Image (cartoon, rainbow, N blue to C red; front, side):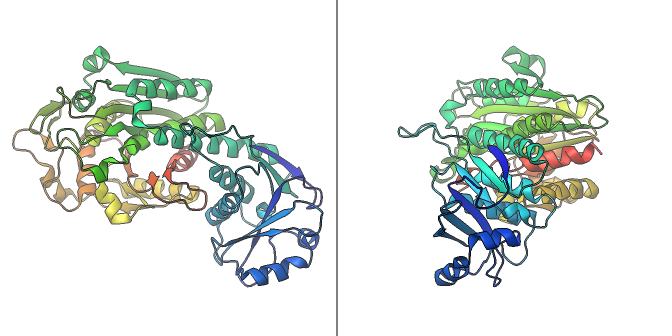
Length: 484
């Protein structure tokens, strides 16, 4: 994305301009000069279109003046405008324009909100995303150019920051949207590692004998049924002067058939997205490096494919982890927590100030919170609140859910320390979080279940159907807050 300032509406060279309107005011957002430049025709045209300025409402008008962009998109700002709804407004404005429109002017950044310009740039970039790798008629598109009418003086710095975030949100979406055949665990690890190396991160990949040597029991068990072997990818970002160490863990099941406890067709169709946690973690730490966040970050991506092959784990098998914990496999479709346990063992052995895992872990959390809100679980309420605040600041919806200790009884096993299936049909998200707690020792730890917002069925504002890149911005905000 290219960004530049222009002095006035008439000086804009863009194909279209996006402006905003509050309810009932019939006034385009921005300076009086911009409103005057649009001309008196705007009010009458909006009146004729029945435009009320409500959030999510858009109308497209031809510019009759012959000066400036020839298409005017007016987006509703709603009554309770904040930075996230401004980001969404920019996304709505971009989506109503054809893909062929590659130069867009806007006045939305003139809204009196801290971070307005960055939010507008992000919203435009997020909404400009397409996944056309496998479309026979896809065309190479030119970069999007954004003209900020009367933009801030530090536009270049803002543009670089917005690009660092939006590029990595796109990267996460690409990884999730990639069909399962195109992302075997080892190939996915190498793809991520190459991008990470370009941002200055170091990496290490364990596979084959290295998984056995390092006692990665969960990965070996879950990946045993696939002819595409599992692996563990470790990424390291160590900026000079960092005082805090954040360790991130991502679930990376590249396809989840359910294993021997095979899923129904209905639930298997979107299981290419079961590695969204790993995609989020990878994209997040790479974005942190590009932004220069002063927090040390170690990331573990546990990558495997869950298939019902001849080497697959069986219900009633027992797994012994590197920390000595034994697990009875109650359900091979509860595999995500098994591979996360490997990574959490590694995370707990280090000097982490905070461990955060991100996973599309349970349908139960999605049932509780719906498709747009992630669940935050932590045994420490202050830590949960800290991550929730990061999500709020990033404009990503999340909510805290409890971890009652008396629920642990439903994770008990008669033959092992713990079982990976919850002993009641209710509260499955809590059961998964309590299971993960077994592997983090006494380290500060938060679990984020993104089963709902990581992959969506409908397009809305800057979110397109498919992988969303949810959580990348939250992790950046969290790491930034730890930098002080």
